[in-house]
Length: 254
Image (cartoon, rainbow, N blue to C red; front, top):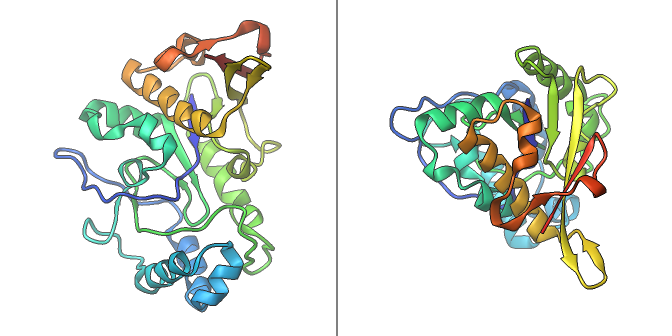
């Protein structure tokens, strides 16, 4: 079983825990090629490309300017501890033991506009580049095309080492589009989180994002290896709803 997550825009520096060896991203050369293109952008260009404020654009111009193919614990941090958005507040990886981080390294992958696919302990230099950003490189007209073959090949290689060949999709729609499911050699289980409201069940983005992290945390803390075990997920009041689910779309309600 492999759990797929989206990255977050917000970052928080965090060193590798004692006794845990960080790893390197699989596609450093491809990331470097993207950075080389992005280094030509001015703050004004990035504002237009990314649809962000001047301050965010300026920050990322500075980040891309110093980005290096040499990853060290001074210029980079483990991805699972560096991301700090809603998903990662639910995941709360800062309290994972060494063995739990080992489980995460084996079973969790993070899709990324700059890095393609990250393992939790892969070192990552700070960046902002959404997967849906309309930037081309070579024959690729956008990041989906740029990462298409790399991501699905890496996922298939990882699935080859699993018993059930299941991908649990806890990523956003924007990021999961980077996975070429036609070439994926495994089953995809999509997870949905809904809230009970007077007018029916609703998906509320901020709660759904945190719940994706909570389910990942549940998997880590319980050492889940059989996807069916995820139906027992019950953190913060969620429960599996059989009536609202299908074999490949599982709905959890609170």
